Length: 284
Image 1: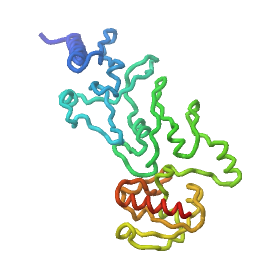
Image 2: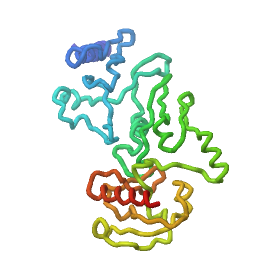
Image 3: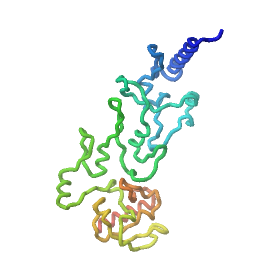
Image 4: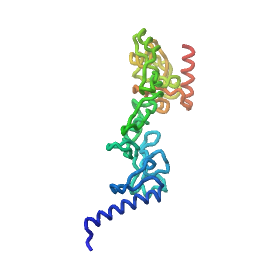
C-alpha cells in the first residue's frame, strides 16, 4: 500500500507528539506539552527557564565572564545525547506577537553585552567597557531591555533614580560644576586604582629607573587637559608610573579607554605600587 499524503501527515504528527511527550518522561516533567488544537509541541514556562540547571531545553550561551559556551562540547553526560541532536537554546518567557505569553528565543547577544559589558559576540575583549558594572537585563511586555543601575551610576560619581532607571547629577556637584566651570567625573575605581595612561600626561621626565623591575620606571609629568576634565586632575607636576610599562595583570582599561593601574592587585608588584601611591598621597 502506497501511503497517501494524509497518512504521511498523520505519521509526522504522531512522531512530533511522541517526541514531545518523551521529553517530559526522560528529561523532566512539565517541560513541554502537546497542543492538540494546532498539533504543536509547546515549551512550558518551566521549560523556558534557563536559570534551572536541570532544564535541558533552555540554557544561556554565555558564562559569567561573557565567554561563549557550546553545550554540545560540554561533559554533561545526562543531556549529551540529546544536545548532540538538538542543542539547547537561550529562551525567555514573554508576551508573543499574538499577545499571549509563551516561550521564545532570547536576543542573547544583546543580553550578553548587557550582563557582561566587556563581551563582544562570542568572547571578552579589553577596551572601552572594561570596569563597567553589569547592567540590568529584563523582559517586559514582550520586549527585552537593558537598563543602567545603581552600581553603574555610582561608578560615574552620580546618583541613581530607581523610578526612572537613570543617573542624575547630585545638587552639590551641580553647584561645584557651576562654580568651577568644569565637568566633574569621579574615577571609576576611586581608592582601588589610578589613571596612569601615557596619553593623559605631558612633559614626561624620567625620575628613577627600574623601580619594580627592568623597564618599569618612575617619572615626573604634568596632567594634560583630558586628564583634568575626565579625572579631575590638576595641571601641577606629579610623579608616578606609566601604566603602559606595567604587566597586563596590573592594569585595566577604564570606561574612557585609558589604562589604569590596579593598586589592589595581590602580586608583589601590586603591593609595591599601593605602597608607593599611599606614601605619595600622605606627602601630598
